[in-house]
Image 1: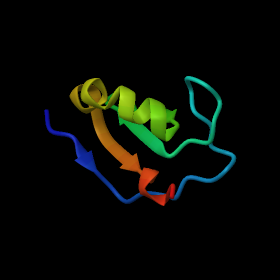
Image 2: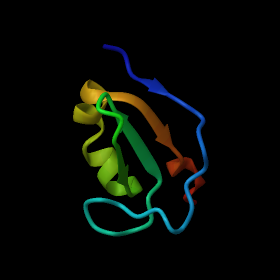
Image 3: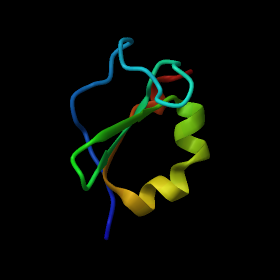
Image 4: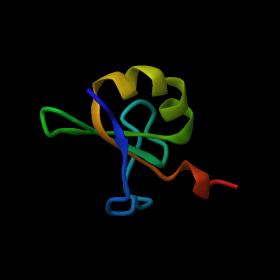
Amino acid sequence: MSTSVIEGAELTAADRCDRCGAQAYVRVTLASGFDLMFCAHHGKEHADKLRQVALEIHDESAKIK
């Protein structure tokens, strides 16, 4: 299975990390159709495993300066 990094609907300040509640910068869409949201820290921490299970990854972490 290949994972694509896509341009989807932008994440907003209302989108929160499922791990810690910080602002989400990464949205991962799974085969089940469910989305997981991660802050930049947790998205990076779990990136290898997420690539293995994700259909799509929308990553806006480059917005952080």
